[in-house]
Image (cartoon, rainbow, N blue to C red; front, side, top):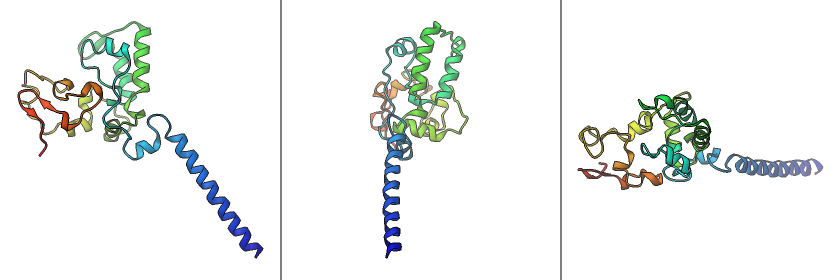
Length: 193
């Protein structure tokens, strides 16, 4: 009888401890953005986090679409910020203090720390050490745009490049790249067959 009571007590105690450990694990690893559980289950929010840094919007968005940090991993943003003197053929150097503020923002909000679904999918498409400099070089991007013809993008004067996200993605600035919101200039709404 004492043996049964001891066994039952140990079983109850073990179950309780396992439950507390699991709850603590879930709480610790899923707090904030990019927690283990959110990433395991494919992210918790659609799209990517919208840009919320006014300095980034002003400095980078004045020349091109202000790509959301969640579209690339931190290692890519580190490379981009290290080569501002030759930023895709342009000199985009910034004062060190400004560059550091923007770099910090990009790294803290990069795809590898995000719980937004599209960021998670981008990260899953990359190999461990991949550090693409362009969003359009990620395997995820290439897969999502593989049905587009040059006539629709490259030879379309209202688009011109795959880097011109907002030309077709009507809600891109808000971090939404849903197929329902695609309107290709001179071609109309995107209809995936």
